[in-house]
Length: 409
Image 1: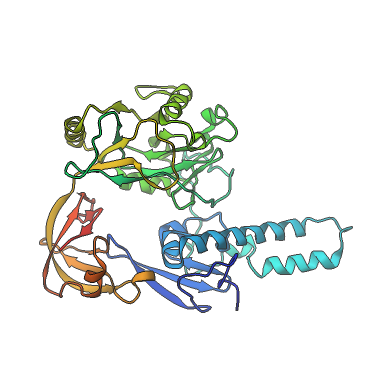
Image 2: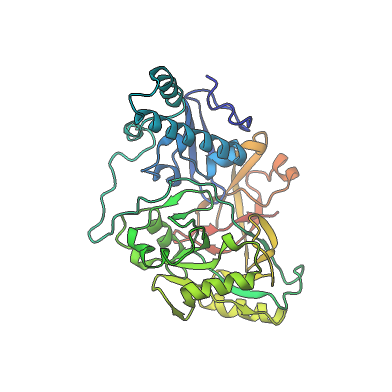
């Protein structure tokens, strides 16, 4: 079968035969994700893939599929599959006066690359057994906007006191421990382009106030030290806890060629100051001018005492670059700890032939995996089972395992 092997001339980094399954290990926990090819599409048992309930399986994706097959390939596959769905729908509604032979060819071609919406609920190995029921008092999820889009946002590099640039004149803001959310004028999307099904009334008050081409960049946030609560809410459009969520907006990508200060002024005109917002569920992230390194360190200490994740530094007069850029810097405090290596886990993609992650045991007995921070040489010759490694992490999850873990030996 040729479908799934190439889209728009782009081949996947890994080729799976029909009905073949592979596994990917989480970098930060002991979870294992199962990826399977079924005909013209791929499935993953991760939450991000499964909970795209209103999206046909042929146009679903997730972080794991993109890492395994390649971001460029997944973008091409989704675009091709989405086009096929549209072709199928247009053919079905065509006038009977149209040429029947051509219409039939179009339908067959569309069916070869997609499945009908009725079939989507029959993916028994990955989809929930029952449809989620809306909680009492919850608003109906919004139906506007596609379920998947291509999202390219500005990503930060890391600033440290020892190696970082002089931050004088930069804009300091709090690094929020929420869920990154891109607003395309119709709905909210993750960095991977998956839709968050926020209730209709979440953006109803202010959506019409934006220009028709407006896009926003921000975080869905419920408060400091509440990351897991935020994730559980925004994954479900049926949650009655959406009123707890606020959208903290910090940029306007559609004005990307304008200086940051001009973009900030536009956002302030629409949404008001951070301490006096125009709309109760949209807060403009506060930015203050940096006076030097001591200002950064003092502000970091001040906010972390209150439970903040860290700081962001924005270069003055900078443009919005939809890539990882030195114009945006993140400042966080990491802690060191030791753990015993108990297992090696094979990698995938470019690390398919070497170690992908090590499983370690903390002094308290908890196990987790470390998959980042290793050199190529360390992956080829990982630390021995039973040896002690040093890792760095930012904080502990509710279950007591480290978050934002990176290994260094």
